[in-house]
Image (cartoon, rainbow, N blue to C red; front, side):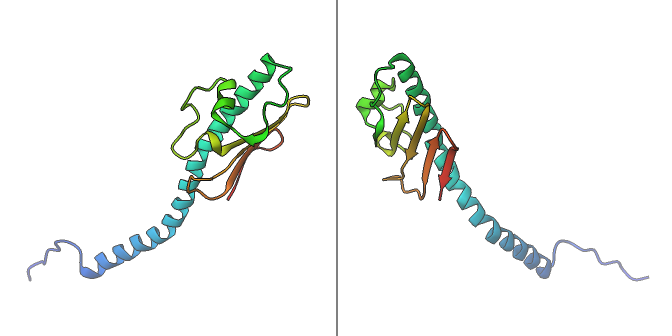
Length: 138
């Protein structure tokens, strides 16, 4: 009987097949993940818009004669302070106070908070309103 030859490792063909499969998976996964990163960044804007909505509702509940405070201009530090935010509360990694525009109609309970991407390096816009909730448009 002849000697049995022991196999010790992978052949070059087997290694090349594995590298090819990993390359194909990476080519498919990377574009998908890039889109998810953008959505994750926009979640910061959605969270801040929700905090602004809650603060505006509380402000109008406490000050029913203050209609017109939030009428569609970009949110400023002074307006944010009136809503109860302190300096830096609405400053995140991707969005700051000036990236939010608020329009409210407290008589009918309607509101719209638009999040712009000015200076953030992100694409698209976000909007939180009383009709559709949070909507991100790429």
